[in-house]
Length: 232
Image (cartoon, rainbow, N blue to C red; front, side):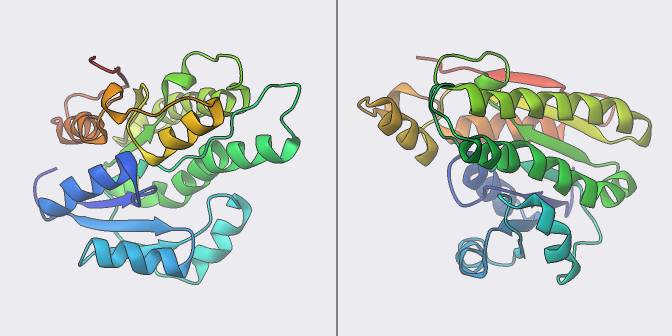
């Protein structure tokens, strides 16, 4: 992706999303950063000078179409990077529909809806869709049912999209990081009632390196599924 590629990124405010956005910004690529509201958009624009923002709430995917109809979408999209995610741990016996629906909306339905919106531009650019999934997209443990279900669903979305868009030259990658030292991980530890030690987990920069590797591969190859585990 040499030259001025344009990347649409969700979750650029923290963790893996911020690390990826910093790296792409530093090399001079164009960024379009999705923010949940105008205040957040202002923060993101200040953090990444020269970038554009789009406002849309991933928790309410049914309204994204309406939100985008009032804003100008980028003409060119070389990559769509789905990094935003939410987590709410709980036992099946205790999780409410609200907790299920919130995680499914943000982690699965919104990425499907964003992909639908940007597919015309992605086909034109023979671009790349990257889904930052999770180890939970491959294995589900106790207390993780709703989050893992949303991430298992995200893997299905990516696999189907890859089959559908292969002939159009659109590449699709799922990245499955293990636990990463990010604000989300702090929340997970709070919910688990455990002490948080960031040095035990993957640095978001390391995950960003793997995402850039997938993006920068020559067009003759595509990384489908990439699992990244803590090295310590």
